[in-house]
Image 1 (tube, rainbow, N blue to C red):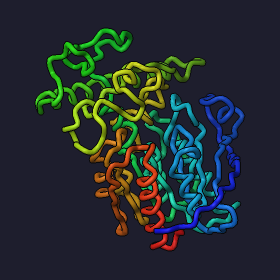
Image 2: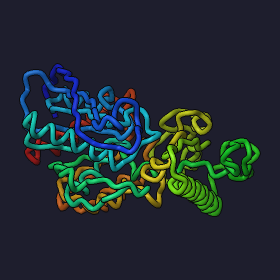
Image 3: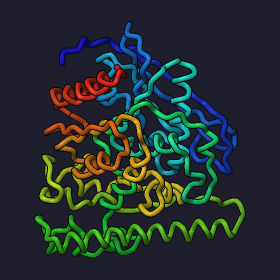
Length: 391
C-alpha cells in the first residue's frame, strides 16, 4: 500500500510521579527522594495531526533508534518510545514498577497531550510487558511483588490501551532465561566447573546436533533444575537479610553462562528460517560467557520479579488471557531471538475476540538489511490500525 512518507519531528519527553521506596534502586530515578523521573522520545510526522498514539516500551532499553518506531512515524503515526526507570540497567528491574512507569506515560498522553486512542506496541522484551500492563489495567490483581513488597497497582488507576500489537516478541524474560541458561554449570561461583555432557559449546561433548529427543529432554530438565536452584538461593538469601535486619536490604549477584539454547545450534528444534549457530547478540558461544547475557547481573528482588519462571508476574501467556482489546500478533520467520512457537502461543491465549496473526517470511529480529520486509511489517500494522479507526 503506497503511503506518503513524512519528516519526523522529535520531542524529548519528561514524565514524573511520586513514589516512595525503602532504598534507592537506580541512580537518580527513584528512591529516597520520592520521585520517579522518566524520559522518552516522541516521534511525530511533521504537519500530521493525530488522536492516536502508538507507544513502544521495553522494560530495560530504549527503542527510538530501532527501525519500526521510526518507520511508523515516517508513515504518519504519532509514536512514543518510552523508557522505564531501569533504562539500560536491568539488574534491579522490578516488573511491577515498570507497568507503573508505563501507566504514567499513558496518563500523560491522554491528559496532557490529549490523545484519544492508545495502541501498545509490544516489540521483543516489550511484548510481555505490554501484555502484563494491559491485563492489570483491565483488571488489577497484583498487590505485591514476588518478593513480598507491596505495590499499589489498583491505586495507580492504570488506563487500558485501546489496542495492542505484539511483534517479534517472546513469552517472557523468564521463559527466555529458562530456555537459554547453561545447565552445564555445576558451581555457581566457578563457571569453569562444568558437566561436559551438558556443555553444548564444548567439542568434547558426545551429544552434537541434530540432538536426540532424549538429549533435549535431559538438557531442558537440567536447565529447569539450575533455574530452581538459583531461585531457591535467592529466596534463602533474601529471607536471611530480612530476618537479620540492619542496613543491608538487597544484594546484587552474577549468574554465569546464560546464552545456551539448543535452538541456536540445532535448526531442527522449533524450525524457522533463522541462521544456525547465531543469535540476536552474535556468536552464541561467545555471548554465553560474555558480560551482557540474560540475567548476568541481578538483584535478589529483580530475579524473582523478572527472571524466575515460577514467580514472575510478567508471564505473557497468562497475561494474554486477561486482555480483551483488538490484538495483532506478528511473527518474524527468521527471528534469531524469539523462539518460533511463542507468537502463536500468545495469539492463541489472547482473550480478545478481535485478534489476528501475520507471519513475515524471512524477517529477522531487527529487519537489518531487509527494507522490503520492514515495509511489510509497517504496512501490516498500518492496515490493521486503519481498519479499526486507529490511523
